[in-house]
Image (cartoon, rainbow, N blue to C red; front, side):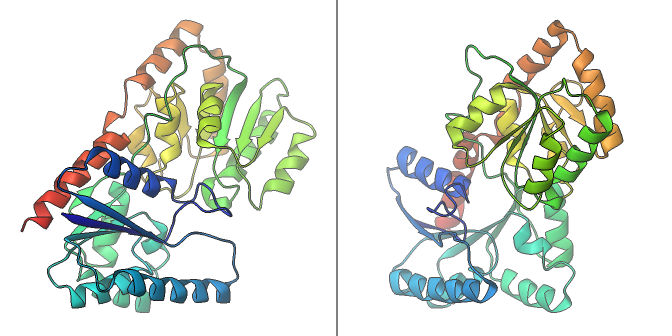
Amino acid sequence: MRVLLVSNMYPSAAKPYSGIFVKNQYEFLSRHYKHGYTWHMFAMKRMFTSRFGSLLKYVKSGLNFFGKHLLKKYDVIHLHYFFPLIVVVVVYTFFHPKTKLIVTFHGADVTNAAGNRLFKWVFSRLANNIDYTIAVGSDLKELIEKSLQCQVNRVLCAGINEKVFYPPDHVNKEYDFVFVGSFIYRKGIDIVMDSIKKLNDRSIHFCFVGSGPYMNELKDLQQNHKITILENQSQDELRSIYASSKFLLFPSRDEPFGLVATESIYCGTPIIVSSAGGLKEQVNIGKTGFIANTSEEIINIIRESLKMSEKDYHIMAANCKESNKQYSLSYVCKELKNTYDRLGNT
């Protein structure tokens, strides 16, 4: 069986961890399922461009796809991120009608169009060509079915690499709370910063991993609080940071799944997350973490968590190490392989 994975997000020199989960899936499938399969990857590598530059990038990528793959036959094409590469993939299936098309929706590829009538109409027509639809979270599934009138066949996250994210044998809890993600409004970093201001407790050590528009404001806050800022961390470095933190703090406003939550849990670090999207599906309240949406709720949980006895904290950390196995890369890839088998043999 010939399977082609397609994605408009993939690691590049400019963005080394963009779409890392797609790369992880491709490498895992290629390594563990060799007999009877040939695996192929087409990805548009990410780079910083203007709006016009992005348009040219997509056009060039489409032409590149046709040049490399239009004359080749695949049993299954699995597209990550619906738009815009759905256009070139649909054109491919016009010439190869026996090819089965699977699409995994990751969120922004459909949420940005949910309120635009023209986009919804175009997207729904394109979605009619999909043979099997996957959403990374339950809330996203509902949005897709409502906005695109497209049935979602499966909710399945992108998968966390358990060979990268795991609890170390010995660790020093250097940070009390860690935020991991882009420093943008959607990720809720402003909520965390507001909580720090209101707490006004310089003994609490916060760590922020990422970059973005809130960087300067965060650096101003750093002047009067115990804050560490880390940029461009590798996956191995992230594991160490999670394990060195008592809690992950991630009150995102919109998160179709939110891989960072289970990455933290796999490292044995409990989570404090919002109820947005897939985040609420990853936390077992009181067992592996807590839910907080506002700065007031975060402040209350921070105060209570810092009062937690060492015994109770170790119990919660132990719970994390045994949780969320259904989100592992190995489980996700096994389920994908089974889906390819069913579709490719029909």
